[in-house]
Image (tube, rainbow, N blue to C red; front, side, top):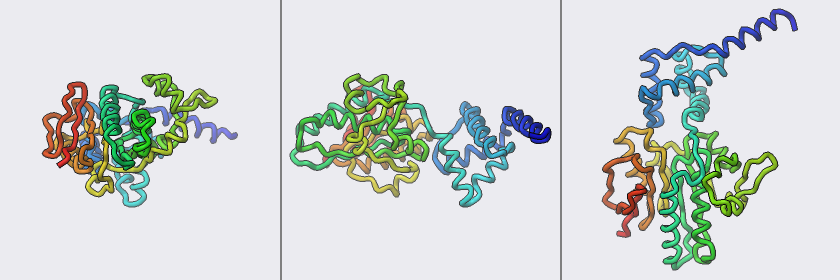
Length: 296
């Protein structure tokens, strides 16, 4: 290696560690508008540091040190669309775990058992995890369904769909491999029944359960164009908090339309206040925020 090469590597390393300059007010505003227009996500002043850190990390990878230049790149036609998808993976992947809100899953178990005991046909049940991230929620739904339907030949058929805007999160969901800490809230017998331990200490969803779960990309702003309908269960938790209040209601109205009669909609507690729908009946349980679609 000659001295010129060594100097280049050293200065490059120093540049990579140097924090980018703070965003100007105008730059932050432009990114706020772009994100909300395209995804509905609202980044307030409290999340400014998160946005700046996320953008900086990606910009360093590309060798860009100017927020405006990067903004122009992600809004530049087809080339920009590819980079936008990569950026969305950085901005939307959230930390989650199996059976994240236990009272919601207790409600689901009771609901599914009642549905199973009343079943008069082998019509398969359809469950949907909206904003499924890396798959913990849809697999939790699948485990709940499998447990509730055990031994009932009429309702052994069910399928779970997980949707998210992040392609990298969906790929993780399809892989179905998780660190041990993700399973900490699960009963040991469920872990043994639905996961196999890998040589590196991680856990993989067993094929019989994985075959029940399908993952697909969906921007919730495009729910009106989505093919989903007649869903028996819809879970939408820890997603609405990122949207404006009016848009939360709009999303919930769209989801309500996609419930089958008698279907269950479960929302994150505290994520929406005062919302109601003429076709839905609130579930009388203070621990959860859930609704049943009326049969008429």
